[in-house]
Image 1 (cartoon, rainbow, N blue to C red):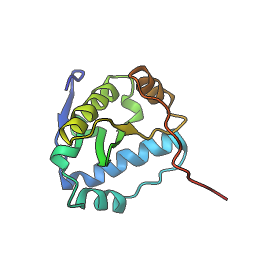
Image 2: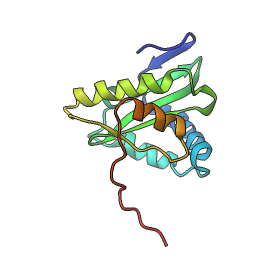
Image 3: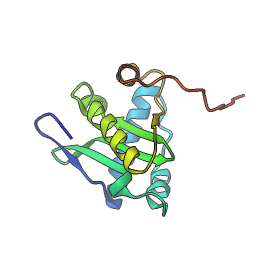
Image 4: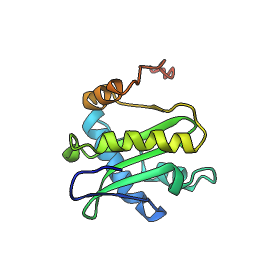
Length: 142
């Protein structure tokens, strides 16, 4: 993975759950105004027998701080979160490409990614790399 000086790719481990949760919640609050994912959610994801941290997740650290996280938690679907303070430094591009390689290694012909509608930088990056808007999942609200 090509990264800017000072950044390094890391293999995540179960003890990283709190840092991953903190990063995901920071990004969700920044992009959408509400942090929805909980540490319990991440513990369930990381604890699933079918989920391998070594094959299905990656992290980016700036020193000791986790500033980027990517995973393929479900069949052909990726999660990518970059700390708002570190956006625009190539981390999203590196993790997007990592999802392509990880998906191929898992036998998936394609990979998608959920992105908040206000994450315009992420949307622009994905569209510039051939991603297209998919059909909404059908979440209904009252």
